[in-house]
Image 1 (cartoon, one colour):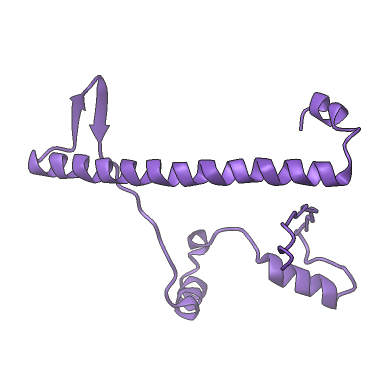
Image 2 (tube, one colour):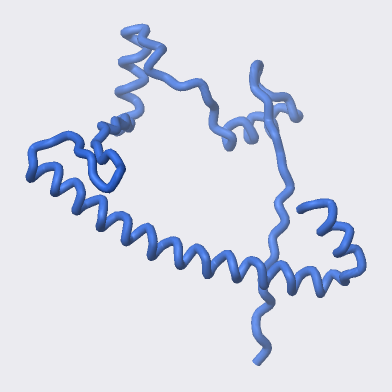
Length: 138
C-alpha cells in the first residue's frame, strides 16, 4: 500500500475498509478469470506452433519479427524416497540433494525442544490477513 493510500484511508471505518477490500479482491478474481482464458488461448497457439515446427522438422524459425524455438526442460522427481536416500548414502553423491528442510518438521522439532531449532536453521513466521465474506442471512 502506498503511503498516500494509507493516509487517505485513515478516516475509513473497518467496515468501509472491508467492503473496499472485497471489491478489489473481486476485481482481482475477474482478472484471474480473464487471464485463464488468455492462458488457454496461448496454450492452443503454442501447441499449433509446436506442430508447425515438427511438420517442418525444425527446432526454430523466424516469423512475424520474432524467433520461435524449442528448449528442453528437464525435471527430476523422487518416486521411491528410501531407495534414493540409500543410494545417496552408499554412493556419497550428496550433490543429488538440495539444501532445504521441511518447515513442518522444523516446527515440530522446535515445539518438542522448547523452541530450540536444529543447528543451522532459521524459522520465519509472517502474519497474513484473511478477509472472508460473511454468509448471507436467510
